[in-house]
Length: 214
Image (cartoon, rainbow, N blue to C red; front, side, top):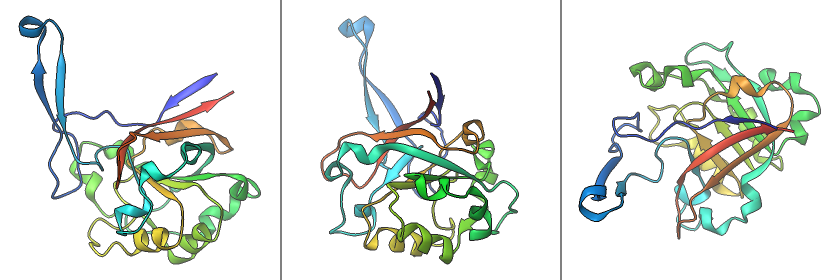
């Protein structure tokens, strides 16, 4: 079995969404004093490679702990968007070449190659985003989730988050952000999982996103 890690490592001084604080790893117990090591971790629920549920935008939306665990595993398809330029839209023209696999997938993962910018200022530049037609296609489908190797579904400068709102308004779906290594997954269906921490009333959670091939 071939397994690919699609997850950025959580560390202090890592990229975070503008305006939030970076994670802190605070020593709580030490080998010398206590005979074991334990760390107090402080971070936002949307740190690193993470999931958004509807509760991220809507007070009455589903939280991550309300989803069945089966929501976080299934067949995925990578949509290669690397030919797009900064600020371009991801259109149905990009998706149409994937044929029947497009509707057989349970997760659509959009690969912009932006993970190669991780740790640089350019990671926060104007990455391509899905347009209205693609978003309509997604919300009318039966997808468990969508994902991106960028920091947001909406443009980073758009604080109104219209794509997030439309995605979550009437759908039991998750959104995955800050993926990596999608170029290693090929252009056909593969197994994918993105299990979150089981936090009560969770508006989001870091995940260990993984692809595997039997």
